[in-house]
Image (cartoon, rainbow, N blue to C red; front, side, top):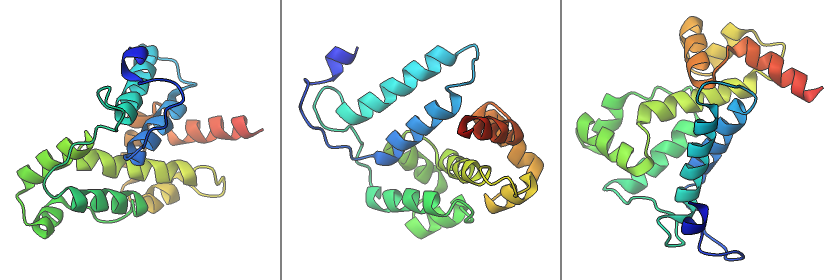
Length: 178
């Protein structure tokens, strides 16, 4: 698979969707120590996703679909990751873009391969991971500072997307640092 995708050694490539690469590497890193039923498959598919993003379909260029409103969507995505605690209401966003909610969902998914909601969740969980490194903050404080109004909802989402509770993640990270 790799040899069919990569054009050759020593050829530089331009990475246009650094957010996808960063998110994929981050997801791989957060799950590297966790062993599960589909652990190997997850890592393999994540690596393939990165390589397809970098090399496209063998063209040497990153394969990022160009959609209507693409520039506004890129800016929106950057804003979501810059301010995960923001109120990312789809009704408001689609009104500002002057498109329907259904069309917004289709465009966003076509542009980035994930839904806007998934990006909001991922941005909030990344913020939470940063805050979990500070042992003086409580889980409730971290939930609030990550954009969650309800700390039990935060803990459920963290476990669902990261494979461990926030407390387990904190312990694992502090053990890695020692």
